[in-house]
Image (cartoon, rainbow, N blue to C red; front, top):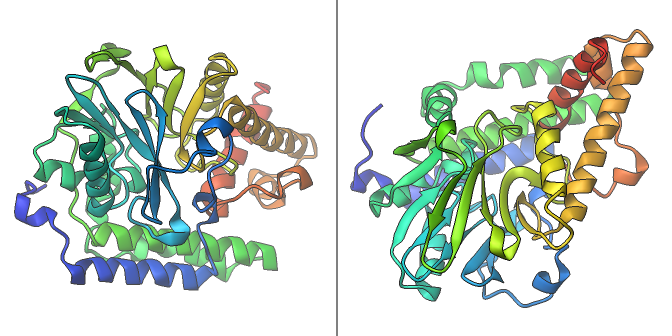
Length: 373
């Protein structure tokens, strides 16, 4: 793994367009639109009713507390940020939350922080390793800002992303291409097309940037960790569930939580990397924070505990389906193929079927066979 230099962190226009073009091709392949990340902010009405401080189209900035700001992405208007993030600024220091999907997204966050605070940046924190939360890290590296993440993030980036950069993606695309060839119905074909489109989106964005690894890995024994920013205390906690290495950022005195992708507001969560049992425990914990808690989710709008309860309902529905399939003697693959979105969840968005459904159903199916649910 080569060291990232300042010169390398600047995406050229040609390189960016190459990645954007491949992302566009992903959309065309599956008729796929990442609608799960392209909704107007809803929930936490007292915050969302206010005009954003800045609206760049691809992302807007909202003040959610004293010294606390949320960056809310809208991918219908661009892929620069992709995920939500934000920053917390005290009298003495500031923390940035998320590396976003591109250096341009991270640069936007730095610009927004500078517009509201002169406090020096103590660190940028990646909530987990997924591409849409880390591909902008090189912007922080160029600015010599420390990048913090869970201890499992660096190994996962090295394992999952570095071998793919600017190399053949044939093996990466092969499972989705095989699924598309062997699709058993129009719905199954549509799901496979969406999965392939999503993979091509990831591939294009990986090839369009330089990866910068976090340079401080937070080991679980150090967490939770309190950070005093001067008048604002934040707490960094580990709650693996969406991935093996999820962090959240809490501001307890203001009942604000940056949840990363442990919460997807009004959307089927992405579960391909998940430990569903641990994720459900995290959601139970979030629900215990109380009705006044404000969550900045990984995707969607600023929300409250209603989003937590809705996500638990989605998982419970998939678990009930899997349990019924076990009782009927269906195979795991049949259980995955036979899941359908119930009417009450028809308004929820979904990134791609295989990313959101298959692993969750498989884990719930195994739990049902083991009589754990």
